Image (tube, rainbow, N blue to C red; front, side, top):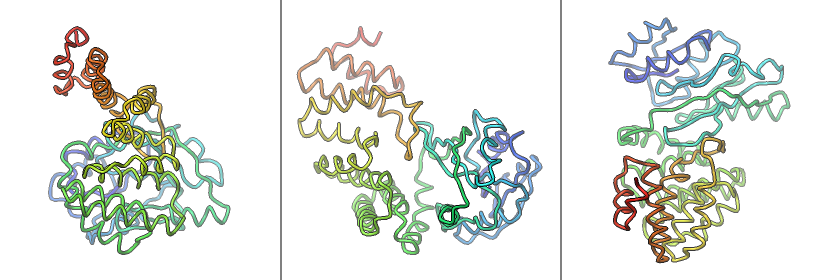
Length: 359
């Protein structure tokens, strides 16, 4: 783990590891809160490291000190949940197993996707990237040599750090991301995260320019996966939609790359409503509402609300524009039941005479 001023999260993270790991190595990069005291109370191996804007270097410093056969890397604002020691160890005894993908929930509202978080303690596997550090370049070398296999794990991680106001993180990450796209301009994820960060800070035009640069480089290289390509398209379409542009052709192009990009499908439903293609939008929304977000495991995360409250709300809008007031009221009422804390849905249902449906 890398830690700096993680007092609100660290104790919970370390407790989630009890009985599941053999040692815990924490690299502290300059905490001024109670993080060091918390770590010491849990009996971890604590290392001090002078931070110099390079997450991979800090990870590798801790990695060099780890003595176990396998490495799990985790952040203080993450937790292992619904996981046993057997879950973590399953499949790792095979001599050619070199990494495992864990189930990961990036925020409380997201669906699960798979993350490379567990790997063999081998000097040939080291982190790369000053930000969004990863072992994947080194793992790819071993895979090309035919000596490394990846297994999928039932172990599950949840991330708490993306709930709430992200402004401080956006401001912290922005200079690191600008440097990262300069150093490694062909890594598409850097461009997507730079675009999301700029958008989070209200810099929409610069965000659009960033994701379009990422798309251009992805198309030129031909090395970006179809799933990652569709994710870049989703970011571009979402941002350009905010300018009032009709993004249906772009969204369809993204869906042709990854037909189960549910986030793109939701975006298409909204774009179709805006363009007056109401019946087609309803078809998209019905498909979303037929999914169980708890069973979806994709290569990207989706907001669970697009399968519930958000979809019901859009369904209500489409039905209302078709003149189906009673059906629209029922849809808004379903949105209100799915998200009881959102007063807007309840007000819409009540305005259309949906009091009975709310009861």
